[in-house]
Image 1: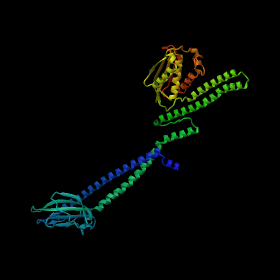
Image 2: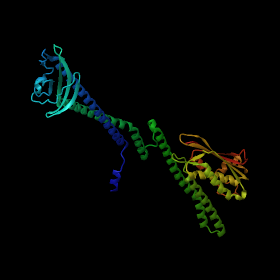
Image 3: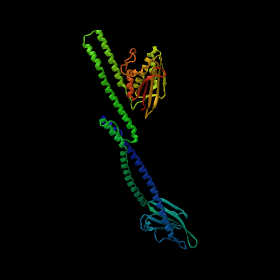
Length: 461
């Protein structure tokens, strides 16, 4: 039941959405085009019928004459043979004063009492409903002069049935519908072909991702269109980040297992020997302390997220203030003053836990060795494709670190002074975090304060 409902709720594909949208747009366009063409054709046919009936009326006027006595002589010939064929649908009527009326042979048996007299020069074109159906009638009022200069007013009316006009309009509509339907089908097929061709790069990306899932490829190699280049580059960076994370977890677990072998072997050896209880207790506690340091260090390494393609930028200022306030309470007896030089836009493009671990170890190390002053500097170091880099510098006014001891101090478990409390793994953790974010760690002497200076530079992303 759940599978069926989820299948029903599955959204349409991009191709289906585009096909439906273009299909509706094409149908609306062709429909409006057909409607506009029908209206234009109707008006054109109506105008053509008006002109045709007008010409017939002029032909009858030309063929009509009057005698000296005012008698009207009708034309002998017809402008169209249909005027001589009864029921042809084309009719001519002439009406005048004193009940004069003439009708063409085609008007036999039909009632044309609706024809009215018009003033000379007046014309009219209108549809008229009759018992036999609708007629389109063109009427023309004229005045013919006799030889004795008398005027004979006449009205010439030419009518055509609606059937002929509607047949012409219907024929055009059928032809138009057939061509528009064929054009619509051709355009839809062309649109489907273009959609398939346009979405081919997306299908290629999907296929390449499937190859990566199966392990047959390492990256999205392309080539891809410009619009997909940013997407594929980010996906490749995300894939690399996840692989680095898995590799880091795997290496950390292997290192943890390897590092714990020696302390555990010593503990087992001590327990299997018969020695002094006090000495045995001290040896075991010493090994437990070492194992605690190893676990703490490896957990810190595993927790390092590393450079992420998708990660919010963490502002430095707020975290730095909270961190220094906590350390000032811990080292209140030393009365250390920590100064800040932090740019407004300085931010860490990564996980908050990594930032706190990185900055916390550096600042805490400075508090341990400082006499009275610590300086924390943070500034942006350029803009990449998406995020800015970061330069983080921590300085103190302590004794500093000799050049020949720098590499030794950065090793895990080594402390600059055995009298200073700690596990000696803080700076090593800093190195691991900096390496995970593809940055650099540089240690030298502070020109301003005289003590040690730790400079971390993380590249823009």
